[in-house]
Figure: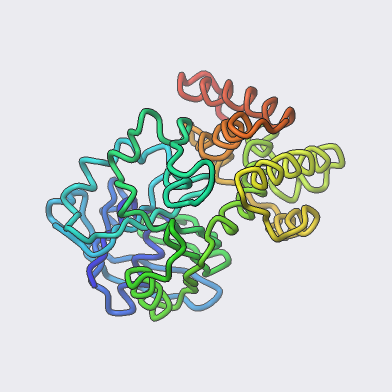
Length: 329
């Protein structure tokens, strides 16, 4: 098996290091000082499950890698549309693209029986730009339950969780999913092949859609949001609206709102990825979280006043970030 990790940041480098430890031929594609450090010393993983160092090939040039069996995408979803030139040299006729992303994926309605089958979500896949870069037939969904961060260039700190749930848009237990899952497990990770990955997508999104934007607006940790009574009530309202949208498109998340909040609260004084991006002056990855669900609410005639309000304010915040108008913390 040959795997390229495109966007070998905290999650990507962690997955690549684990796969290489399992004997997979791994190529990490990254840039900057992080790439320089991985080239020189490999990927050092610091984990409560045991530290280890892995030495996969690292480069900034996908042509140096050539066609692979799987591309593991560690990029933010808002970078997918521009990823075509980096993806194309990595593809052969059967290459699968494992997209590890938060929120609603561009492939969501691909091979989903029902009234919305084939619907393209404009906020996620504007004018089909993501589908052009990442063809639907190559897509393998991936929901990440691991938390990692780059402690310093070439060093990934694994905080918690090892599960990477994967699945075909059509729900089949395909040979390509099974083979990738087995390699991930051999590398020490959990990688169940789910017959209905959309369940995982909505369960994780219930947390992301509330905690990520609120954390950016309030510059608060997840535990801090949960401790604040009115902020917690806002989280509940956003989750309720999200669950209703999920039901309208045919998915009923099998978890209670209070249990989902309790799970998030256990993360403690953790900064969401959106808050971290804000503090670094990076664009906010909210289209696949908020904008997509608001679009699906419009599609299904669902009333989501709280989500609309938070989306309006965070969209303004993102615009300010993109124009460098937000002061540093």
